[in-house]
Length: 112
Length: 328
Image (cartoon, rainbow over all chains, first blue to last red; front, side):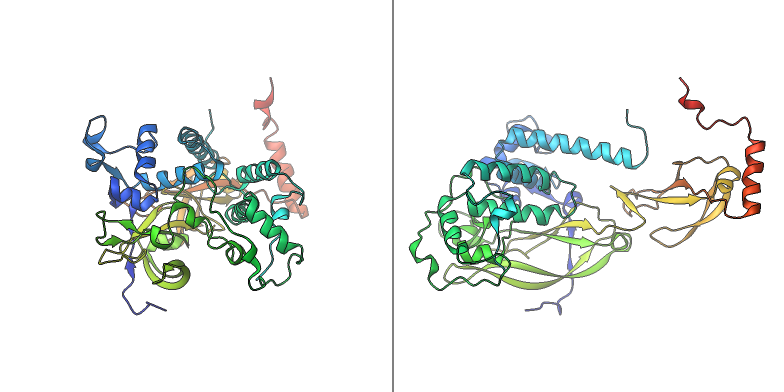
């Protein structure tokens, strides 16, 4: 079944233009509420703006678009390596550091 | 359908114990998991390994697989005999701990033996795949789907339209999930970067009972380019220059993803010097920069006059020691 007669679908860049509510982030990432709460507790994803450090309920939280790939990566690491969230968070921090070192290497600047 | 040798995929003997299978999987997962690996084809390799693990780690599945593989050599066309699994009753999945976020899509072979793959683990198939919008029996919103799309560097520079085929699980009236292929024409926005996600509203699974459809998320991957390398918004490429161009300065023609430009190489440029073309990286606010990284191409002394030219250089630069920095 083709749908090519329709106008092309416009993709919105999630990382730049999307803000998730708690429920929307659950749905988009495939995480359940408890998993997402645990990720917030672990500092893996952070509610943006005024919600940080306040006692707002999760229903009032908002997340930047970056929270989606982070939540999904954490879920994959937990599932495929049987890690807990703290372990997944550590892996993700180390991967980010490796990426930054790699890009410094590639750009030819000296790594100190 | 091709018969899959799951023991070979994990590199274990058919007599391997449960622990050996687990160990082999863990080791290969660390090597090939797409989130941690830079190996070529990591994703495809990991899929094989994960599928083999999924089949062999569960004693019931393993017994069923062993039974059928006794009658089959790997690589041959394979059809499961009718009713072959009547003697097996799957008690379902073991305790997997956290789940979800999965986009694993196992082979037809796996699915013909065991049903749909890990998609089930996150409760994403059948009726469970629908999330309740308000609790009770109200409208149910369709689940969100994820897929990857590969684009060329110039697609990000110029924006693009892509027609893509996606295999999506579709739930029929009986609650059975089947894969359906569908085509989507998608506008790729200018300036999109590696690893970013596009959201296509309402293109996920259909809702039920009047609920809205889910969304489709596309993860952007760039196809490797022979010249240009990406680092976020910035793009770089190697610009070979001759020793005299590097020493004396020159204006050279350099490629950019937008087409060739004239580029001034400053006198006294050394290997690795980066010339920045401000704002010529990926478009955006702000746009990235494009870097030409100088590499010095040294021509060989192939003829008499060329040899003489190098000898003359050697005489004139008699005091030049390129290894001065190596002396302790």
